[in-house]
View 1 (cartoon, rainbow, N blue to C red):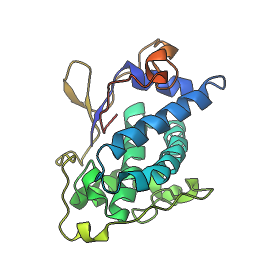
View 2: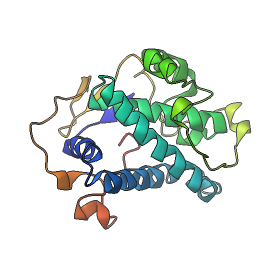
View 3: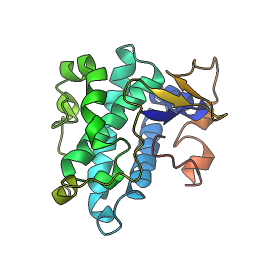
View 4: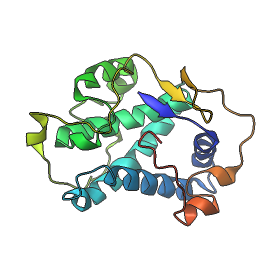
Length: 205
């Protein structure tokens, strides 16, 4: 999968690991991802999916932290959560929201199979053992699986985590974590995101 990576991602990771601000960062990340993906949904169905996406992204914060603890770097941990979301979108027939083509789901799953299998995650069960509470239901559009359209998907990146840096350079694997990043850069923590003015709406945020 092709991801972006900048100081904000490292700051958000730091915030999630600090007791004093982790709840704020978590809420900010859930709000951001919900807003981004609702913007990619069919407008006729978007609002029906809001609560489901909020619950989904809240759970994937836990899988992100678990992936970091398991030794994955920041980009890989974030990719794991985006794959879980894409599995969920596929299961619901929300193909217009997917970031990868449906025919690459298996290849992406296999790259992280040890992490997924240990935690009960499958394509059919994207949250696995992380789903410890109810997830809001949302209507499916299964007919779209017959002829999937992926306007926001980029194929050809199934063999590794591809990272686009702030300068636009694309590399394989995540960037080295900066020695120091301002906590105010974290999603939900800085004034910019707190006021809803964060302009980076990348679906691979």
